[in-house]
Image 1 (cartoon, rainbow, N blue to C red):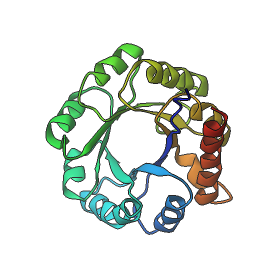
Image 2: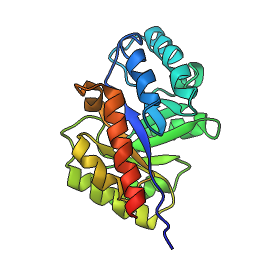
Image 3: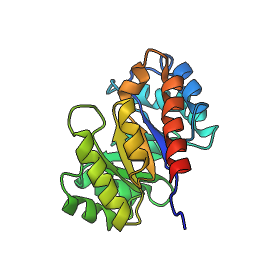
Image 4: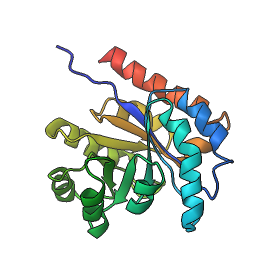
Length: 211
C-alpha cells in the first residue's frame, strides 16, 4: 500500500522594509503552487512598519487558505492578523510563544542544533519543526535531507525541510517531510517567484506520481 503523502510548499521571504515591493510577486506565487505557509521576514525594527507589512500581506496569503507567520515576535503575531510565529531555538522565546499563542495560533521552531534538541521540541505543543536555516550557507543540503528523513520516519510532529536551490527540491520531496520550504533566493529567480514555485510544485507532483 502506498502511504506517500505529497508535501506542501512553505515560502520564506527575504527581509523586507515595506510590503509594496513584495506584494505582486507574493500574490503571483500564491497561485502557482500548493503553498501552505509563508514566513514574512523584516529588515526594519520599527514595530509600526512591521505591523503594516503583515496587515498588507496577510490577505494575499490567507485568501488561498495559507497561513502567514512572522519570525520571533509573539506580540506582533497576536496583534497584526498573522496566523502565528516561527521561533529560532528552544530558548525563552519559544516557551513564551507556546504559552501565549497556543492553541489559537501556530508556533513553529527551527535552528535545532542536534537530534536531541529536535526530540525535545517535538515533545512540546509545537506545530512543526524546521530543518535547515532560513538563509543559505548555514546548513548543507545533505544534512537537511538526512534530518528530515530521520524525523519523518520516526515522529508524528510535522517537519519542514528547507531548500535554497531548485535542484534540492526533488530529494526533499521524497524525504517524508510534510513541507518543503523555498528559501529567500527563490524570490530572486530571474523568471520570477511564480515560475520558481511552479517548478517546485512540479517536483512534488513527480514525487507523488513515482511513489
